[in-house]
Image (cartoon, rainbow, N blue to C red; front, side, top):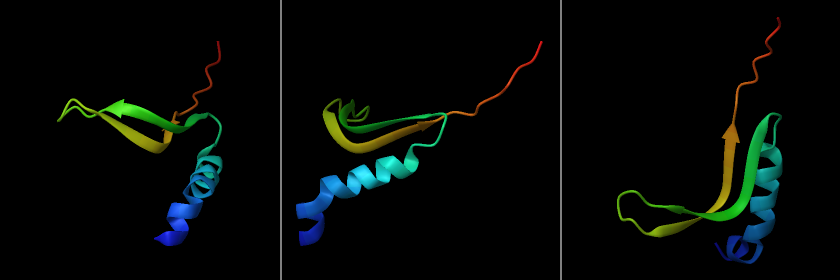
Amino acid sequence: MKWLNENGAALEMRVARKLLVTPSQVEHSGYYRDVNEGSLREFDVHAIFTKYVMRTK
C-alpha cells in the first residue's frame, strides 16, 4: 500500500497506456457524478472502447 501511495500516478499512466487501443479514448484523472449520492467522485483512469465498423458503399 505504501508503494502504491507513493507511485500511484506512474501506475495509472501505465494502465492508461495499455488501455489505449485504437479506436478508444483514455482519460487520466477526472471527476464523475455519482448517480446514487449526487456527489462528485474522482477516477484515476477512464477508458471508452468502441467497435470500429468499416462501411463500404
